[in-house]
Length: 365
Image (cartoon, rainbow, N blue to C red; front, top):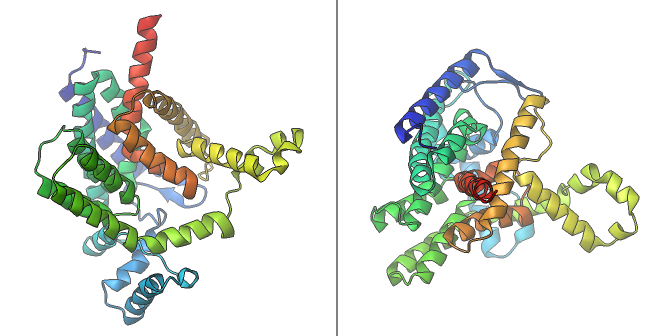
């Protein structure tokens, strides 16, 4: 696909984002649960309350600080059953604080999120054009995912940008120094728990390539710090998923299957297999929508077809892409609720693999 140059695609993609930003600002989308949503509205979803509550620590609330200290004290004493609070990354809470994000002032944070997605577009667009063809950039640039994440006031695009810069450094696509790489790693840890998979991928890469021991040591310290800080998060998340709010998808979405062959599914092992298979499929976007908007579900379903096809093709090559993609996917399938936003960091790679597969298929016909 040589009709359009990288600059032309990038220009069209940015113009599309600006047009959509203005359009949805003037004509918000209705969500059945959250009401009307726009890029410049105060968005109460995406764990906003979680970050707002944690912001109290920056206000030096004595009760919040005491609770924070007691949580980690219980972890050190191995009193995991006494852990009742979990904490998000500091970065986004701090961003909410300094931008004075509120119902009256959502604009600064909105602009930061929007620009972050455009920077990610610039970075991945160049990579996709160089590694395969402009077609892969066109698909990436005009797919609703990740485009729509530039309108959502959450940690997703911030995490996406930083994890992308780290991964592309490991791919030797960027040649910035290791000091900057470690700064990016620390910032990533300060955004959300999923940083553990990216840092672990970097550690594997450094060990495999016999990098300097100091690089391996620093990465290991950052990884350990990540694990310790987010231990309350993992403890409570596992408790929610496994006990308080068990994943009900198999009983809801495969009811007919269970009724047809009930004797087989009396075995817990087979039920678990079905559960993880459904979680895997949901993670890519084949997920029931709470928006009440059929168009949103159809769009997400189409994106999911591309992503899961790309994932299947990515299994052919055992390289750093393979490690990175699976380190993002497997922990979510095994331990977390399969929200499709978790795969955002690997969306460009899934699109790239999808395009390579389609090209190979058309070439062999």
